[in-house]
Amino acid sequence: MKPDHCPQDMPANELSGRLWSRRQMVLATMGVLAFGCTPRRGGRSDAEASSVGPVRDSTPADYGLWYVVESGDTLSSISRRSGATVAEITQANRLRSSMIKPGQRLFLPGSRHLGSDPMAGLLDRHNDDLPVPQGDGSYEVIRRGQWTNAAIRSNHRSMGTINRITVHHTGEYAGTASLSDREILRRIDRYHREGRNWAAIGYHYLIASDGRIYEGRPENIQGAHTRGNNSNNLGISMMGDFHRRAPSAQHIAVLDRFLSDTRRRLGVAKNRCFGHRDLSPSICPGDQLYAWLQRYKSG
Image 1 (spheres, rainbow, N blue to C red):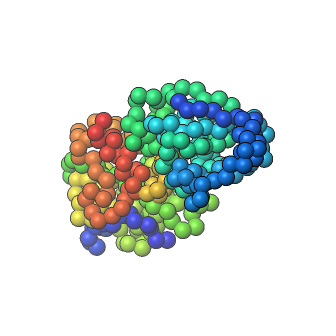
Image 2 (image 1 turned 90 degrees about the vertical axis):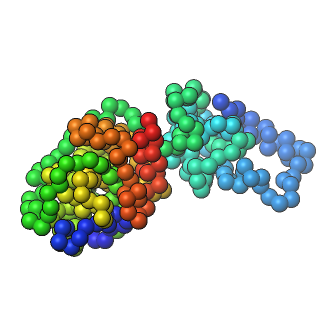
Image 3 (image 1 turned 180 degrees about the vertical axis):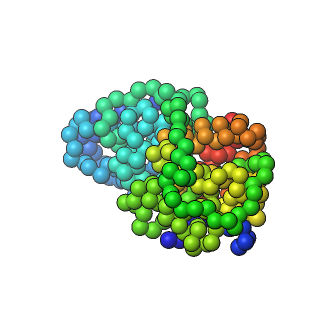
């Protein structure tokens, strides 16, 4: 099993818009037929080009709403107001990215009305489509001995005083879609120990998609997660690939809480929290997670 981008690591010895009802759309269509309106030569406008309409066009009138995007809207803000998830809106309108434009029509599946945005004024609209921590971010730390019987090898160094923290993502591993988080964790651990001859899994902690935190190796043992920069450096990895896909709200809430708790416990300042790419040539922890980390550090 070969990892995606991470880790790269140690020496060998270390190891408010308008609503359109279906009826209004039908009337508008009848008007086009009656007056013989035709599209301009050249096809759809730029606003229409990225959204080719809902996948289901023959759904009942109460199945959803048509919405005209206004300045300042994001998919996340529309999702919060309508109740339709970003994924549902994206799929229903066949969007290729999260970029939307004023005047663009979006179908909001399953929505009957738009309420106010509970996060209005609290978010930078340019970062609004990044995950926002929700809930209390409570977590459980599962010690290494609780999830594996594999002994830690002797080829490791003492950590010393921790004065920095590096955030990673594990990347996607082929053939793991149907596996449990624990099984994926065991496979990563086996690859790091047997494939790379490291003392144990390279990260100190891994955060699973369900919010559980697994200890990879004790904090008093130097990690194997950031080539040339492992000394005094605690490694925390989010399980998954977050280059194009953002972590879930639950996943990011746990990272937010655990990272803050760990910093306070160890006396590590926010500006000493890094993404893997800050310290080594890598795209880890992925664009989406890295963007969240920048927000965290500036908050």
